[in-house]
Image 1 (spheres, one colour):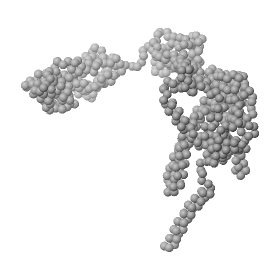
Image 2 (cartoon, rainbow, N blue to C red):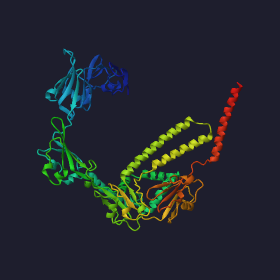
Image 3 (cartoon, one colour):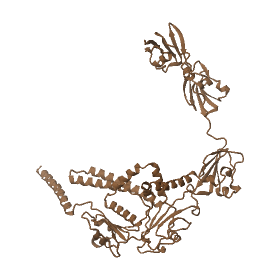
Image 4 (spheres, rainbow, N blue to C red):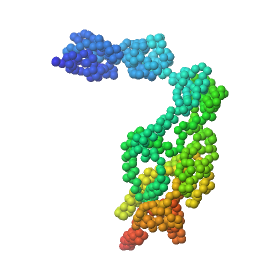
Amino acid sequence: MRGLRVFIVGPAQRPGVVTLPSQSTLLSAVVAAGGPSPSGSMRRIFLRRDGQVISELDVYTFLVQGDKSKDVQLAAGDVVVFQPAGPHVALTGSLDTPAIYELKSAEEPLREVLRYAGGAPVLANPHRVQLERIDPTQPTAARFVEAFGLDAAGLQKPLRDGDVLTLLEISPQFANAVTLKGHVAQPLRYPFTPGMRIRDLIPDREALISPDFYRRKNLLVQAIDDENADNQRARPAATADTNADATRSSRLTAQGAERAGADTTAPSDAGNGLARNNQDTHVQDLAAVARSRRTPAALFDDLNWDYATVERLNPDLSTQVIAFNLGKAILERDDADNIALKPGDVVTVYSQKDIRGPVAKQTRLVSLEGEVNAPGVYQLQPSDTLRTLIGRAGGFTAQAYVYGLEFSREATRARQRENLAEAIARLQALSAVQTARDAANRRDDTTVQTTAAVSNAATQAQLARLSRQEPNGRIALELAPDVHTIDALPDLLLENGDRIVVPPRPGFVTVAGAVVNTNAFIWKPGRTAGDYLRLAGVDEAADTSNMFILRADGTVNHATDRRGFFGRNNLESQPMQPGDALIVPTELDFETWGRAFVRNLKDFATIFGGFGLGIAAIHSL
């Protein structure tokens, strides 16, 4: 139970008198002292008792070999003496534990020093290590570099104080490998054998089917199973629209509400976003795959059978690219394209996405839906147009509404997305400039401040609406309302991924925005926009001078486009077509011209009054 008082002297971290438990050993005292200081030794720590050295501890021996033979038990009054540090060498480079190590004596063999560091790793180059040494006996410079291998003689080489030994990494080069990469089943390094050729590396067509193809097929099957097991979660994302009229009506109504300034979709968007966040990742992936079934896309990425390459590094370190015909080498078994390989070659197989080939050799798919005699996904021929494709599908049905034909393209969708991003950035920049201008011209008038706040809020609301919009990629064909035949269609060349939807002829017209009755009304020949506006009832907040018509063919007629004499609005006299939507925006500025005139007159009176007082003061002076 009694403690031991031990003295710690020399270059230790915490020298002095310490009290240790009665069962403490020499190592306990070393730990209590915090080990040696930077100038202290870990190889020579003495324990003195009654004026004699009874033990000399080498901490390396304990840490590397676990030898505690020199770790004797302490007695009261013992003195632990740390000795000054001995010679040091540095090990660096390709080593698991690079560090500065202390030598036991003036020189130690390299094998012993490597044992302190855990030995040379397998990635170290056994044929070459570098030694930097300080030798004052050299006639020109004291520092020099020496290189040798880690053979028996090299491992016996003595190291001394100040040496820096660097272990180099082995070369990452493979001595007998040929690399296969690109659109293949197993992109790997393969062992080279004498006489090896392309067909030894790619024996058949199965070696060119990438795993992504099977993953896509499996996901499609899982998406179908998920729909059958959980209709509430997967089917809404996977089921195609079955009612084109209802889809167009809801889309036009939503667009009209956005243009009118009515942010009616925010609660729904927030709820849908929360629901999507709560879904697990697996269901989201399956829903995405299910949605992709509506987009015409091949499961297999077509190969470029006419072009593949062998990249080779020549002895003079120049790169050589050898092109060969993959189809002739693999499918036709042509020996001319069955190129002989060498160690280090890299064989690359390309798909049509990597290097686009001729249109005639591409697999291009187009989706044709709706009122045609044979809807489906069609593979395009090199010269297929909108007119020829619908002809191949058997033409239109009797219910087809050709004027409302929806033609969308992925390239157009991407361009619309870029334009939308540019518009948002431009509007943000203009908003920042306007805010700075309002701050520089700020007045104490409460009305002006309120107007500026309302304007800023309207700008932010418009930015929020723009950020929520998703481009549809639709291209307006600008057809006549009474077209019925294929000959009236434009001779437009089709591209991969195009989607064509021919809706049935609707029987209604939509009126949305600032009206009393936002509804769909029965279409009757001869009815104009004004007739439907009166049927819906004009709201007191309506801005009829800025209303517009969203046509079923994707075009827009605005009130400012059809001004009559004296600025009269002639949009109300325009006849409406089935599927059209009349959008009436909300009035944003409710101040009448009379009130604006009185307010401005009051401001001018104040200015001129102050100017008159200033003139009178100058006259008095």
